[in-house]
Image (cartoon, rainbow, N blue to C red; front, side, top):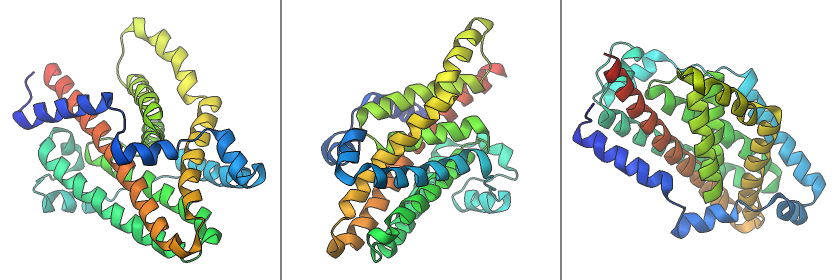
Length: 280
């Protein structure tokens, strides 16, 4: 099938982005927050790292396994109408204009960036005392923002595979270039696990599924997120500038993960549109 001009340009933009390493200012920030775990432990001590890692682990496991995020269909439909997406039911999102959905989600991400910065500034007043609580709070906000982005492109936010995809989006948004590429590979595998696959693919997918959904994979993901977040937390060490840094740090987290989610879900939207068109 042929995409329209906007969709074709978007697909080319996404393909280019998938192959790009972080550069410029983003590379400096993200590489700095992707230090090896031993470096982080040496800086803050094993006991403090374990306390922080346990807080991140508890938050992530709750988001993955214990919490159900409810998206209000009426609220989402109203938001869609405000951006020119005229739907009567959320199931219609799958066949909507990508351009209109993109516009809606760009503004949604911007809203969360501002909210995250405000939350970080408030937490910065408490310095290190509130830093861990702030980081876990912004992690929850980030996870829910990505669920809403995915839902807007027609994906169920409480599906366990979707939640695992969200965790990879957060990893990639927080980490350096190598983490981004690894996360994209795992997202592609998770997508295959959700989709219909030829019989010849099933054994390979089942075998690889253990590597992305098993307890070891979860432990590695939690550690990756913890190290990246600690890299940001360490920049809040000076009380005088804690308010500014906390606000900017939270803004960065939402900005980077929001952009990652934006690209991933747009690609999935176009892949699904091509599939549905070929099936009709």
